[in-house]
Amino acid sequence: MKRVITLIFTLILMVTVSLVAQENEKKVGFKLNGVYTAWGQYQNDFRLGAVPYEDHYIVQMLRLNLAVNYGADVKAVTRMDLGQGWWGVDNVPPSYKGASGLFDNKDNNYFLHVDHAYLWFNFKPINTAFTVGRFNWSVGNKLVLDNNWDGISADVKISEDNLKLGWIKISEGLPGLSDYDAGNALPYGNNDPLDANLLLASFKTKFSTTNLELYGIYYSDAGFNDSTAFNIDGLCYNRPRFTPQVTSLSILGVAGTSKFDKLTLTYEANYLMGKDEIDNKTHKGFLNTSNGSGVDALKYDINNGDLSGYNIYAKLNYTVSDAVTVGLVAGMGSGDDDPTSGEGNVNKLRTSGFFYLSEVWEDSIMPDEEGITPQGLGAPNVRAYRELENTTALQANALFKITPEWNFFTSFTYLTATQPIYAWTAAGPDLSKSADDIGMEIDFKTNYKIYDKLTLSFMGGYFIPGTGAQYLINGNDKTDDPAYELKTTITFAF
Image 1 (cartoon, rainbow, N blue to C red):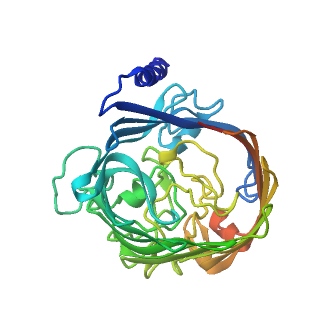
Image 2 (cartoon, rainbow, N blue to C red; image 1 turned 90 degrees about the vertical axis):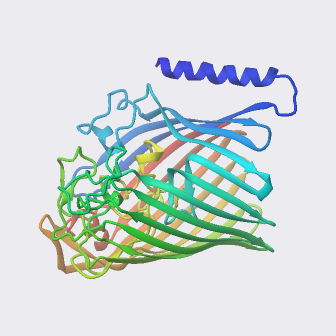
Image 3 (spheres, one colour; image 1 turned 180 degrees about the vertical axis):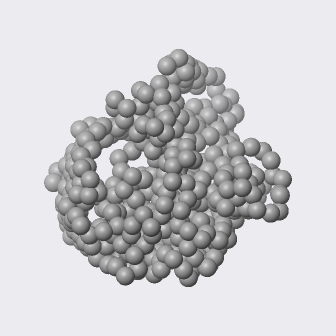
C-alpha cells in the first residue's frame, strides 16, 4: 500500500512542478492520462453443460499513462496498472493453487504492475524516431502479433509514408543471463539458455481514401534443446489442445482500411510458414497454468516439423443514415487436418486477444500481459479457439444511434471449422469422429455516455454450440447446452 501511495504523491508532485516550471527553450513537461474500468460478469455453461459452470464476478483496472518529455523530440513513457484484479480474490497473495494462478502470478490489489516503460526520441537528421524499452508491438488487425515486449524500433519517415524496423527480445531462454550453447539435448524442462528473437518490418502508406500496411515478421527460438519452446511452453496460459511448438516462424501480410462514400472496408490477409523442430512422440506436456508439476495430456500437436497457415479477414460497414449503420464480417483461418501427423497449423505468433468477433465464442483478452479481464470461450480454462484459428465466420450486424449519448449494437454470427475438429479422450484424438459445425451466436451491446468521459455499457451473448465446438471443448458430443453471458462495464477515460 505504501508503494501505491508513494507513487500517487510522486505523480501529483511531478504534475505540480510542470505547471509552475519556468518558461525556457527546452522545458520539461509531463502528461498524465488513463482509464478506470470495472466489469460485472455473469457467465454460464462455458463448458456446454459438461460440468457445472456459473461464474458471476467483478473485475477492475485503473491504468495510468505518464509521459515525461524534454522538448518535442525526447520523452520517456510508462504505463501502470493499479488496483487490478477480481473483487474478493486478489487480496490473497497469488499462487498456482488458487484462481490467481491462471494469471501469471499477477500482484494483488495492493501492488502496481508496469506494462510499458520506454524511451522515444526523434533523430531529425535521418527523419527517424527510435523507441527503446518495453512497449506494444502489433501489426494489422492484431490477428498474428499483439503483445508487450522489450525491444528497439525505428520509424523512418519517407515523405508521407512510414517504415518501421524492429527487433524484439522475446525470451532470454532459461531464467538467467547465460547464453552458453551446450549443442546437444538437455533434460526436459526450462533449462536451455539460448534466446528467442523477432525481427519486424512494416510499411504504412496512404493514398486517396485508403490506409495500407504491408508487414513481414521473422521469429526464431534457439532454446529448444530441452524439448520446450517459448511458444507455447513459455506462455502462462493454456492454448487449445494439439498446438505445435513454434521454433521458427515467418509471416507476410497486408492490412488496410478503405472508405468509399458511406461504405468503410477493413481487411487483412496473411500467410505463415515455420518449423516445429521438437520431435514429439506423444501429445503430453506440462500444464502451462501449473508450477511445472501439472500434466497436460493433449498439449502438443504431432507433426513432421513443418508449419504453415493463413488468415483472411474483411469487415464492411455501410452508413444507412446518421442513426443506422449495417455491417458484414467474414473471416477464415487455416486449421490442422490431422493432429497426429503431417504438417502442423499455425495462425499467429502471439496475441493478447484484442481482435473482436463476438462476445462469447472469441472474446478473450489474454491475461498474461494485459492483466485480469473478462474471458470468453478462448480462456485458459475452456481452451476454445481465439481470433480465426481453424475458424470460418460470417456475421451480420447493425448499430443504432438512438440519441447522441446512447447507441445499441447487435449481431448474428455463424461459425464453422475450416478443417475437421476431432473428438478426443485422455489417450489422444479420435480420428474416426470429427465435425466442422462450431455453432452460431447472437450478441448485443449498448453504450450510454453519462458524461463526456464516463460511459456505462451493458452487453451479452448467447452461443448455440455445434458438434465441432463440443469436440473442441469437451472431447465428445454428450452435452450441448448453450453458453451465455451478460456483462456490465463502467469506464472513465481521462
